[in-house]
Amino acid sequence: MAQTDEFGEELADFVRRVSELKAARSVPAQEMPTVLDAAIFELDHVAEQLWPAFQRLSATGPSGIGSVDRQEQQLLKALFQRVPVPVVLVDRESVVRRMNFAATSFTGVRAGYATGRPLTGFLAHADRAAFRSQAAAVARGEGDRGLTVRLQQEPSAPVRATLAALRPSGEPRTAVLVVLQPVDEGNPSRSPGAPYSTGSSHSPGASGPGAPGRAVPSLSATTRHAALMDLVDAMTTALLGSPDGDRPSVLARAAEVLHGRFADWVVADAGDGRLSRTAVLGPSGCGEEVAAVAAQDPAACPLVAEAVRGGSTALQVRPEDPESFGRDASGAPVLVRADVTSLLCVPLPGASGSVRGVLTLFRSGSRPAFSMAEAQAMDLMSRHIALRLAWPA
Image (tube, rainbow, N blue to C red; front, side, top):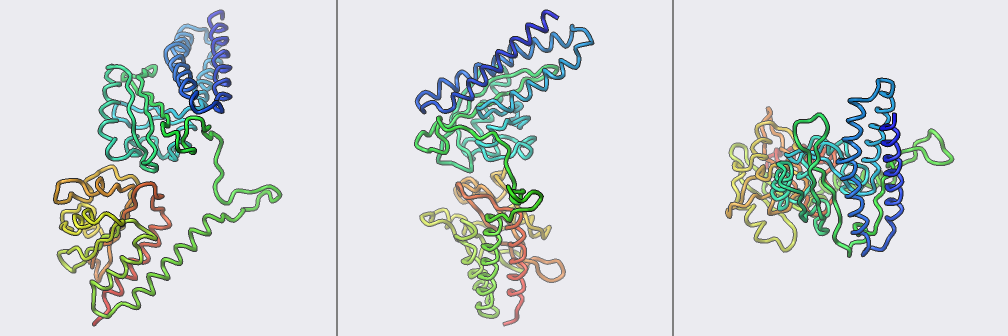
């Protein structure tokens, strides 16, 4: 029991130090790196001292303290979740195994969604290969590493990623502990001195004070729904005003409605047999990129080809395969060159299961990803566009 008491005292000291680190989140920005270094040191202390001590007690201690051991293990898990620094545990392939509350707040990605997916999927395309290489090196035992990356949702704010090796008990392979640290002090929402929110989030419609059990209408959800209805109305008006029998004009008008207000890029392909690229609209100042996409053969775009074969809409957030929309004439993947963060690829249905065309929409940079509601609205508009294309001249 002496070893157990000593372990309990050590753990209690650690908890007190974590409390002090939480209180230190309000220090000036220039002093925050020291606090972050202390937090990383405490994480190393857990990995190298407390966890092995706990494993020894579990292996040699009397059976009567089994429930205490389980409580200590739960406490260690709780400490990982509550450490006020964004921390992610990944394997040697950069696949997320665990993400703490501060990391979910920092990245804007729910832990349940991130677990089982590569962490590189949430980084800018240009940083993915470097991160994979460094994570693999750390997992091989070549020492801790650090590199600067950018999140897809906020590419203008660089993030410092510190990678350290961690050997979970009872597992044959080394995992990698990733600590994320903002380095852009000019951005208040990501400055080193800004605390990370680790509280539970409330979904729209949660009960509010004074009205227990009653759902409070979500203003943001209502606003988004109204915007989608306005978009559908604008699309219907544009389609009805298109000249009969002029398919390129119909698709061009539909693309103009979607461009800007709904998507940063709109690519339209049409044809009853072999598709041809009809219209490409992109961000202002991207004339060279737009011309490169316009020169593509739709048959060389896997997403378009799959939409023609399967006849179903594809929604991708942070596309993992950079070549899923093919390459341009220079050999660069289109999704990388356009900095695509989410996409919708929607077939335009024809008669007897055929496809009259395909609309592909890209969002890039820090713009929010396409939602399921937006994908459903686009599916509705695609049927309207297909009906208009079928009208006789």
